[in-house]
Image 1 (tube, one colour):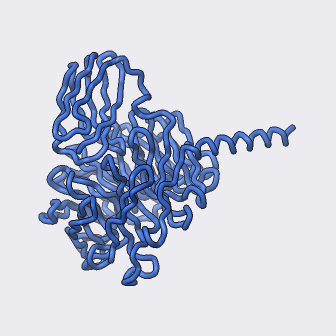
Image 2 (image 1 turned 180 degrees about the vertical axis):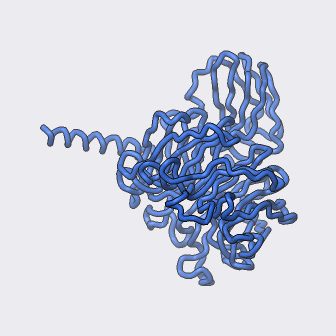
Image 3 (image 1 turned 45 degrees about the vertical axis):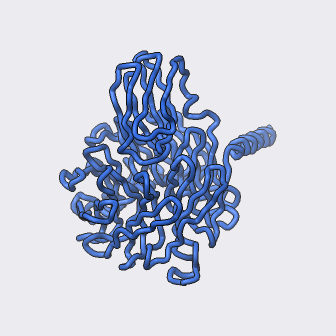
Length: 477
């Protein structure tokens, strides 16, 4: 009897796993030529996915050794049109790129962890066709910081970012710089004084404050004693720094390896370790530091996955994310969970040799599919770019009795919205689910200004006066 039940169980697991795999497609296998081991996220401009690899590419100069210095690439969401935009070469344009590219509508901007004139990393920009590369800034390993590990954020005037090392106390900095490479300004030095150390990921900007997380000790003690990492906020001029949460191991986790996102009310994030099972946590907190709530403790088992890496993604209903380990094959998972901590569902188990494994980045969403990268696995065990088709698209999750028109779409500087039902609020979300604009409407017609936003895919979330909600995808050109 037990044997029969076991056979039925494994048959169910096999069929369920194959059903999920049918939604999963590897659209690029990395190798020594097109790059190795991506450590970051993709960027989607509505036509291409753009990304960076930490190693690989041209090895003829041998400056970075056998494995190369990494590179920048683009590929279409269906897996066609792969183009290598540039091979990193250490001295001229840096090496070992991490994080995601961002856009101001003309150039793509990013950072390298190493290389450049001083060997401690760079800030750069490049055109989407691979031309016009410019090295905007070289970190010096001293007071202006070194080794940025994460992405930039743009407010229309300045690019903001963080270095993991360097600065006055050698444990990281926050800086800003103009897109032409001028006006570099270090906003703060991290240190063992309640500020935290070794920041990780990107900053989140709500228009007034920058929010972020550190992954190192905050009081020069052992992480296992007092904890590692904090959540902080500061103003864009560098004033008003506050630690709004200290991570303290078992209670709320330690060492976050990603960034914060917002649903317009709460900030959401993950820790890579700590928690009840020492496998990481998911949490939310108000921007003022109140109402902390732990949504989940991960566990190193086949059902959950462990050591989450990267950011969460919010689609208006669920939060989505990835773990870098655990799951059915021990190679990481894709999951979703409700913002209140209920409804956890493991969507996919990475199988290193077939699908890629050990993702160390975040997911993005185009309304139909999730896209991301794995650090290892695939045909050359060098990582993959993948898409995971959702059985229900974002725009189909809400019944819609309204007649809603959005014109033009693709949009430029202004879109006009008309509905047969009064709209109470319109929110603009980027591909990571961050709310970048929210406007009260209380009307059937509205005009939305988009000139301050970079090109790419966005989602409009409409909240109606009758309580109905609908989400529509738009493209900003």
